[in-house]
Length: 315
Image (cartoon, rainbow, N blue to C red; front, side):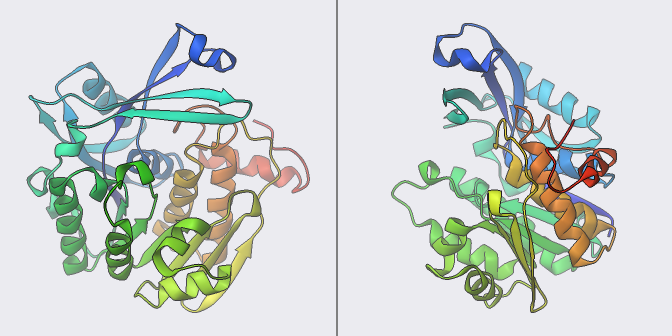
């Protein structure tokens, strides 16, 4: 395959320089984050071609995001919004090994994403389009952008990848399940956590969850199980890979790293076993440092895990 195209909102990210200070700190580091751009960076770091499409404000944060994504080897196709600011979020350690995230994204440039912002000519039969359940929750126009991209990808014969990535706070008073089921039915690959999968098809065993989602239309369903590893159903065959034993620092972004690992191997036409192995390894590395994408691994780093499955990961 040729490349992975991701679509969604990327925001400025503030986090304390000293995580132990939490809410009492007055020193924050500025970065950025977003599920879809995280996946794009992860794919690029693992040697694949990645494109991020979105909408940014005409401001410092927007220009920084554009520059940093390009520095990571990601191609950027982003409209500039002269009327709305780039969204923002703040991460603080609210308890030992527990991170809290607050968002300021209502009316943001990213929430104003629309089909007109997309370059759908990029999508071809050998491309992968990756979308999440976050973007449809942002606004009606953002939901339309996802629908347009998925329709164009399916029409072109591209592979559609969908990560549920449920954010309850974005769906208050609305039914997320219907949207997720519709996207899962149109996707070739579906990624979900155990609770997210249950939201789509109801409470079941892990094997039954991936089977029920596959029955909606996807040929591949990957269940992200955190410290328990992951389960993948691919063309009727179910595989399980245990997690690497690590001491997590920050688990935010681990699911995106998992997706990036899986899709990077898909681009190389690797067998399912290899896709799952790289996905689990990438997810482990993402937990070893703070930030949404800073700890995503480069391909050369994955070899560090070969030192012994029972040993801590060394970076």
